[in-house]
Image (tube, rainbow, N blue to C red; front, side):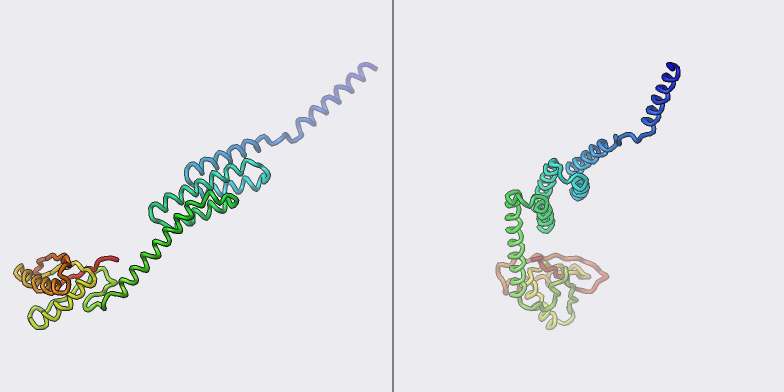
Length: 237
């Protein structure tokens, strides 16, 4: 009986060993994947890749929504967005600042103090932009109608009728009005050097008559291939 019992026990032990080898081992890659995902999230936040970091954080939160450590990363991301908002606001990009601030708010809706200061700064910047635009509009509306130039163009070129002095004087009256009203820089383009002084004098006298304190910016270009003309460049609001 002893040999039979020994053989029976050996068979049972072999069966147990075989079953252990065939069973599915626990997935050891799960913790490693989680660590790698967290490391990638931290790298994105530190690298200022905030949109990517938001996506990564959302994936981690979906996998384990009750994990309290996500709140810390959420706050880090909100603070990164807040810092971005401050930086772009200092550069004058109010819209980008407002967008970054809205992301910070979405991430930390229960911490209004976190975004309060920047929100006020953005509001002031928007107010300043609006006031500047309104002032520019009022200034444009207050200006008399342009006589020869296109105020919306970067510059206007007007041919000069130097063969008819009566017509040229009328042109100079209109040119002087546009120069003063639209703060224009003036460039005479003439085929001969001797054409410039008397044309410049005709314009200067009329400008001084309209506004004695106006600082006329005047230049010349000599080009034998062109007819006499003048280029007026209005100042930008």
